[in-house]
Length: 271
Figure 1: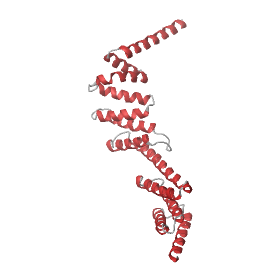
Figure 2: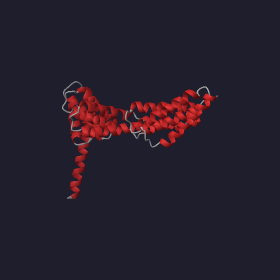
Figure 3: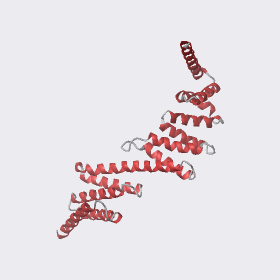
Figure 4: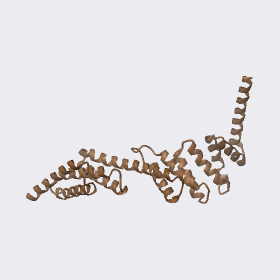
């Protein structure tokens, strides 16, 4: 009896697969659309996507296309093709601004890009897309029940991008011995960019401290001609750190750098 049931199940599977292949390769557009929907509802998303590719052009501009676009986006999301899911959910919101699923698609677009984004040290393209998408969602749907999650993810992504920017700036500083003038200057600019791009950054104190270190070291390693201007710039960097963080955890080291800069300044005046 068990063998008969097993044989029947296998036969059903082969019949099902045969029907799918037949429709995929030789079915009419209507049959392919029906089969695509059937595969989607059965959670066979890769098979559904293969069929949706066949029918998209034929249904362009027709009422069914709204549902097709949403199912394509959802199928990519469910198969972990998150970058494509983000793209298709975003297209859905643009193509169907009056759809009842627009809010959900806008959120899933941002969420998909977030899932597609790599660790902070790698290419941040999808991370930036996620940040912008969540910002658009927050601005566009302030009363959404998804707002707590959107705000949470936005903050996480923003931190991720800040961390990348900070680490890049820090690398310029720590590798300055290879090309002091160029790398210290690059570090200063990179820290300035971080502080300008991310107001209220969690890395602000540390960034201001390393910016001071870069300005201090650049001044000390400068020629007599360039030293006066660079010492003044470094002292301004110290003042900015103290102004923003009067009790900074880097106070002792910062005060030592200030003393060195002031002593150098005195020597230049004497000479």
